[in-house]
Length: 55
Image 1 (tube, one colour):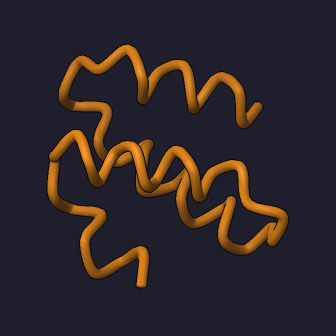
Image 2: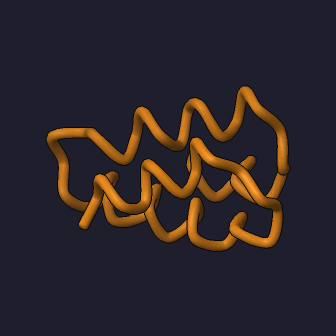
C-alpha cells in the first residue's frame, strides 16, 4: 500500500508516511522511512525531522 502513493510529493502523503514511520511493525516502519528518504529532494522540515527520529 505504501508503494502505491509514496512517489507523490504531497503534504497529506508525507503526513501518512510519517505516521507509518512510527508503526509497531518494523516492516511498515522500514518501508515508510525508505519512501520518506526518496522524497528528500524537496526541502521539507517534516520529512527531515521524521528521518532523524527514525534513527
